[in-house]
Length: 141
Image (tube, rainbow, N blue to C red; front, side, top):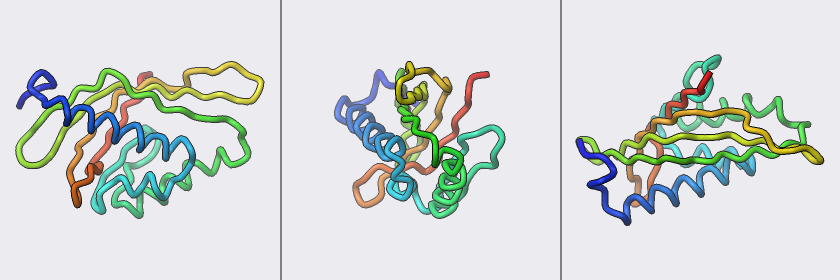
């Protein structure tokens, strides 16, 4: 297993670009498009109080249920990924670990950090595109 020091620059940038596009979908609440960034058999664990969502359809259903509580809230959420470490493992999988900050802003109010997390992903290629096979989010407490 090698770490980022052995990673090609073009792959590292591709992973960063993938995350930028993916999180823009989530932050704009385009939940169906965000769910489509996962493989059909993906696993997504994002909250300690919720069971991991399984399958692309299950991830979409979980996201819709999770975001229902924000329907009337005018807040904007922004996910900021930092300290990205890309790690290769056996096969065609790309393993990544990074920090995530979730920042919320409401009209007329200052932005605040809602959560600080460590995220562990497994990415694969489908038809030449990166997709999440799994995402495990551990929220700092």
